[in-house]
Amino acid sequence: MNIVNVGYDSTNYYVLDSRPKLLIDIGFPGTLPKLRHRLDRMGLALAEIGHLICTHYHPDHAGLAEELRLAGVRLVVLDVQRHAVPLLGGLIKPELRYQPIQLAHALALPLAQSRAFLASQGVAGQIIATPGHSDDSVSVVLDTGEAFTGDLPPASDLDGAVAQSWRAIAALGGRVAHPGHGPARPVLAGR
Image 1: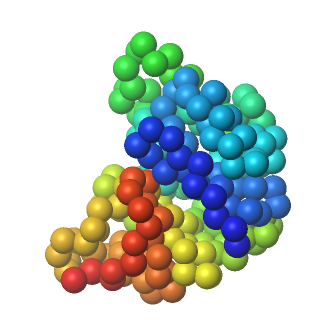
Image 2: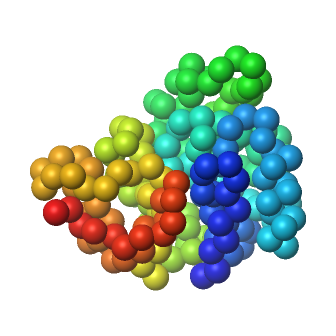
């Protein structure tokens, strides 16, 4: 599986070479020109991307979602995230001209069906709930060991939600974490 980081500013956004391509996370409202530029530099076209999965609904990971939908990319909203989508607008400064996500146009996906959905896109893996940074956080864990973890912080104790999330990633075979910020690093299953 080819993984391309098309991130800009301070956040990583990943394109998986699936059929059609799958985008994991996206940036602040109004940054579509930056995304198009990054895609062009990587030899990719926005039209090749079929779906967007947001690891959580904070402005730097989902603020551009509705603009992408209007450009032809369908948002996938996991059942554990649905409650967070309407709250996103309250986290964004008005001058950024956030376009509220229209849930009626999103693909509502139960976590239990994530493996089948990813397989339909040519991706072997699963999406799991990984609370710790936020209660709506999810991670995409590929069968190859790649894990897209958004803003899940390093495990700081053995019993907290963060450590449990890292253990869940490791239990699925996650070996390399591709975070929302910073370079890839080994998956550590709690300390």
